[in-house]
Image 1 (cartoon, chains in turn cyan, red, green, blue):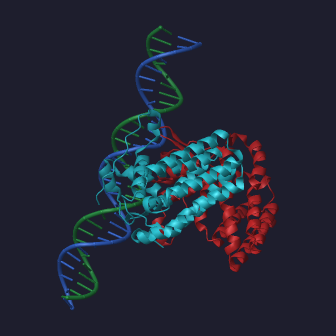
Image 2 (cartoon, protein in one colour; image 1 turned 180 degrees about the vertical axis):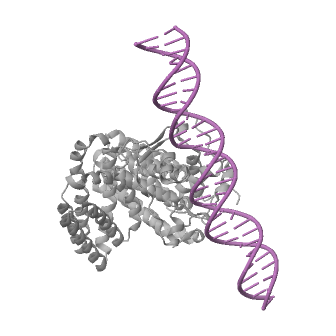
Image 3 (cartoon, chains in turn brown, red, orange, blue; image 1 turned 45 degrees about the vertical axis):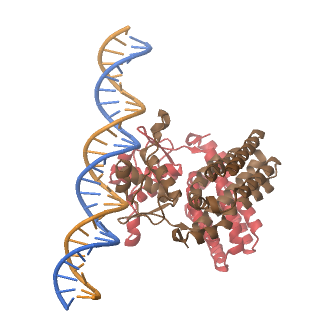
Length: 236
Length: 236
DNA sequence: CCCAATATACTACCATACAAGTTAACAAAT
DNA sequence: ATTTGTTAACTTGTATGGTAGTATATTGGG
């Protein structure tokens, strides 16, 4: 298989350098490659080959594989190979369910405890999303969307929750990557974000929770069409 | 440091044998050792030493360390060592919060969709817990408790949720291990379980959710005393 | 032509060796 | 006595070699 991704440059900051091991860097690179479908479901990726392409030994690659398997992006089959997992509709729905449970609880907490500065920050993030929409820049929007959800968790004092959600999102992000153009218009998503922040600003936990629930249900609506258009990379 | 744990025997079933790697076995052993405080917070555990004690090379031990670090039971400090993490009150509460969010959502789903056989099974598990209580066998109870929560997830069609909860539980299980004798009487916990199953049997999602919420709040009540009695292994 | 036995070319798992960084102890100089 | 420089004994990170299992191609017999 032909690949052409490279490791990101090592950060100059020597302090963070120490903890940013090769294995972690390989994990980051491969995760992005999988989410952006450069590595497609079903592809075989071998320790040796990836190692050669990235110019290092099999060891750090192996550790990256193990982490990718934990997140559910690849399957390591001993003595057989490591394969990019197909996108499972069922797994996507499972991830969505857990994410909904967590994020609804988190946003309720945010509605109770967020500071005025937190809320101002949320509105600012929405403004940037509107800017992305006007510019027709869905990639930038996807990033600001992530920042938005993280900001809510932070406002609720639940940054810890993001560690979990981040892994769940991996399952959903491949779907969202496909959907960048042809799915729910950004305008709709932004309006849902506005509903959430409005409820938080009004200190209305239940309302905020329901707004978030509605927002996270969006992927369920868009999924059938995406599956129909890309059935070769789905299972279930 | 002196240790005396051993690897569990390899399962005879050759099919599962293939996937049960040494690294996984080491992970299981060390996780239990940490939860049961044989490896105490602050202890240094080195790849080489554990490897020697288990009769393996550093490689599988290293992979186990990485997984333990992901779960938050140890901290790997490059070129310094790997240390058993102190129990963080904050992290315990964080884990409890996420677990509550997930399990409440799951039990609501169970109340809607559980089959009659599922509910019968839940009552049976409670009977076993009552048996454990009468026998004064808290270790057995702890296991049946775990089975109970898993059974609810299964009844809701949410076994996938257990993967997440299992990791969160690691944080809480050390606390529960300490609390085996001196904390909440098992009778109280069992009554809470009964409340949950009753609500599920009545197909009352909201009631079931609240019963579960109350049950999971129990650790918050017992935590302060446990921290006071064991402050040397806690931080925050 | 078809099928079975066999060789070959992979794979991941584990063991071992080396490299680079940290810590602590100890010796020498101030 | 205090500080500084050096050394030695650790640590984890990375590289490489060997082993066992699997899949595929190939070959030999029907």
